[in-house]
Image (cartoon, rainbow, N blue to C red; front, side, top):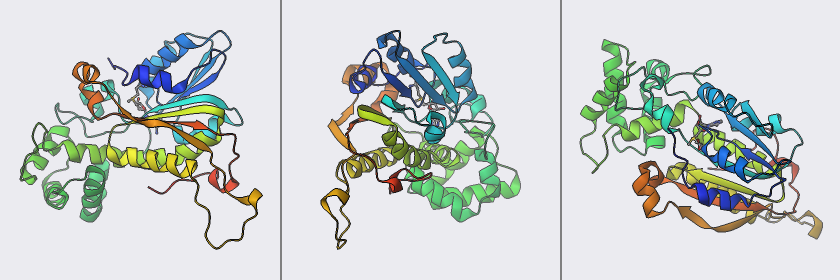
Length: 316
Ligand SMILES: C[S@@+](CC[C@H](N)C(=O)[O-])C[C@H]1O[C@@H](n2cnc3c(N)ncnc32)[C@H](O)[C@@H]1O
């Protein structure tokens, strides 16, 4: 089961019109998608994305003519949507509970399984493959940067020493290595939490995905279309916050003589403050504790071409 986080807040943020076209960029098990479909009339449309083959299986079970699913990364938004504009887009980032709970996916340090961690296990390198081939420095940087882990140096050294003896290929094996390398304990948190978060972000290129997706999403929103993003850690939220701010208050290049008509125009208007889950929701669903929802609305302003080139991204 996956309980959708900030469900009512996300629906309010999208300000759904019955005949609108909506995008759910992170289908998961379809919690948000189902609620969006309930609010759409017969001519409304919902286009969903997820790169996980198991999300695709769940999506096949939704027999609704207004719904289409693409097994694709949301960074392929532009390629999939083409010229199609949407009245609202939702991105509920990170991993779903079924991904975390299935030991065979390798996301969790709580149960033993293969050290995989790929949202799409048919693409790219697993966490075990990364740990087998990366230099110690790369491992240290990934754990330090994406896990904000103080003991990244010690953990990377422990992994490299361990892999000389035998390959590091199981989740519990890694969790135990990390527990020995991390000297202090954070209250209520397993010592492997930060390392697992870091490897997951690295393996799935999560921050790059968000950075590449955001300008494409803005470019595919109809005027007054809403963009709602739920993030689960500060690295991700920082990218969303900065992207919204720079689209809402684009920088005017210094010392460049610009005519009025050449001045960069805001392409987003930020709606409200960042929202967190309510106390009752976090009690019901501990995953909601770290969720932050940011919402913005598309202005009528057009985008300068350089903002929507393939691979265009905001600084993070
Ligand atoms: C938090 S869950 C979404 C749960 C969903 N809102 C629900 O109510 O069931 C995030 C989902 O997004 C998917 N995902 C994460 N990053 C993605 C990306 N870059 N492209 C496509 N799907 C992605 C994951 O596979 C996962 O299924």
